Image (cartoon, rainbow, N blue to C red; front, side, top):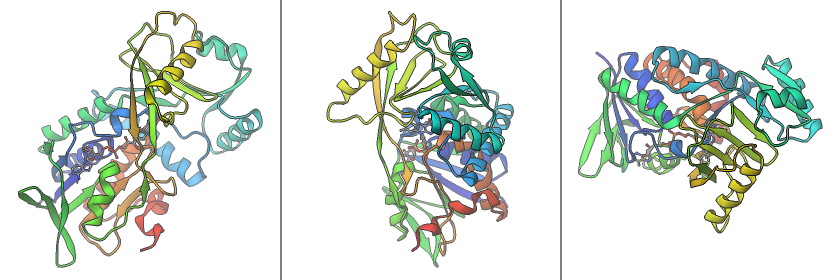
Length: 356
Ligand SMILES: Cc1cc2nc3c(=O)[nH]c(=O)nc-3n(C[C@H](O)[C@H](O)[C@H](O)COP(=O)(O)OP(=O)(O)OC[C@H]3O[C@@H](n4cnc5c(N)ncnc54)[C@H](O)[C@@H]3O)c2cc1C
C-alpha cells in the first residue's frame, strides 16, 4: 500500500517534495495557507548557484542541486529554468581571487574575466568591471511558475492540493506524528512534512520541537517589463540584478534583498535609481513595485532537512537558498521518507545539530 504523506507548504520546497513523493507513488496531500507558490518564494531573487562563502560540504550539496535542476526540467518541461550565467564582482579583488582559486579547485566552472570580456557578456552595463568572475553554469528558475508547475504535475499524478487553509498543529498518537489539525478538521497520514518556511517553528512547536530560524527581511525592486538589457545575473558591489522571463529588471543590494529600513518605498526608489544608473539604454526603465520577503534562515545559515529525532512520522525541510536547493531536497526527502535512505550529502543538515 502506498504511504500517505501530508506536506505542509506550497512554496518551492513543499512543491518539490510533493512532486517527488507523488512521482515515487506516495499518496500526497499538500496543505498551505497561501496560494500555490508560497510566501518567501514569490519574493525571491531566485539565483541558482554554489557561489562564494560556503564550506565545501555545502558547496557539494549546492552543485548537486544545480545538476538536479537540469534533471527536473527534463522530467517536467514546463519548468522555467535558464542557465543564463552569473557575472560576479561583489567582493574586494583579493577575496574575489581567493574565491576563484578555492572554488575552481573544487570544480566550479569559474572564468576570470577582464573589462572587455565582461562587456561582451553584459553589453548594457554602463561600466564594466576590471575584474569579475563569470560562472556560465549559474542560472535562475522563475520561482512561482516553477512551484506551480511542480504542484500541477503532482496533482496530475494524484496529489491533493489544499490552499488557503492553515495547519494549527500536529496530531500525535503513541509518540508518533499521525496527522495535522486544521480549524474544524483533522487529517491523518503516515508521515507529515513541514515545508512551511517561516511558519515551520510554530507548527513544530505543537509537538514540542524547536526549529531555530531567523526571518530577515529582503527588499527587491521590480521594474516594469522592458526590452532585453541583461543576459544573465549581475552580482556587482552592493547591487545584484537580473531580468526576469517577463522582462522586469529586479534588483536588491544583495541577492537576499536590501534591508527595507524605516521607509521601504524610499529604499526601493534609491535602489532602483542605482540600478538604472548601472545600465545603458535604460532611460525608459520605470520602477513598478517592490517586494519584501522574509527569508526562512536556520540560525547557523545552513538548511534543516531531515527527521526530528525521537519523533517518528515527522520530516522537516526549512532553508534559505530554497530555490537553489529545491530539486535535491525533493529527491533526498522522498528517498528518506519512502525508503529510509538518508543521502550522505545531508549529513550536516539534521535538526539534531542544534541540540534538544
Ligand atoms: C528577498 C529574497 C531573496 C532570495 N534570494 C534567493 C536566491 O537568490 N537563491 C535562492 O536559492 N534562494 C533565495 N531566497 C530564499 C528562497 O526564496 C527561500 O529559501 C524559499 O523560497 C523558501 O521556500 P519555502 O517553500 O520553504 O517557503 P515559502 O515560499 O515561504 O512557503 C512556505 C509555505 O508554507 C505555508 N505555511 C506556513 N505556515 C503554514 C501553516 N501553519 N499552515 C499551512 N501552511 C503554512 C505557506 O502558506 C507557504 O505555502 C531568497 C529569499 C528572499 C526573501
